[in-house]
Length: 142
Image (cartoon, rainbow, N blue to C red):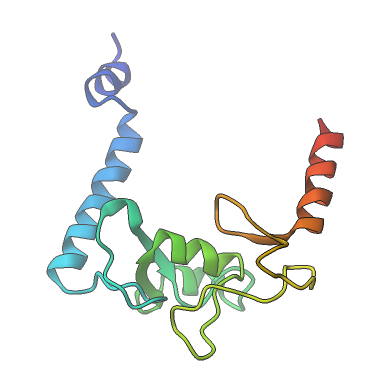
């Protein structure tokens, strides 16, 4: 048995995946010890590793200097994974309430109400009309 297969067999996952998980575990542990385990988006303590996410406060993608912003440690904070995903999808607003997660329109500008909103498993809000259109496009692509 090769070394990579032996490691994967003993770890229950590839060595790369195990190393990545270990680094995240160490970072989460250090953040807790240093009191940095508070979500930059909602201000609530990040309770467990599954919720823990590393976030670029200022988006680096399409910036004037993406490499600098990506590696700038002053631009890195921690957040709940859910908060990070919502921020990346434009669903997080911080107008008056730092914990506000809602928008009153979908990404195409349709009014969202409790009767016509669909929230996907990753938290993306769509109106039912946009969801039907997306489902129709996905069905035709198959």
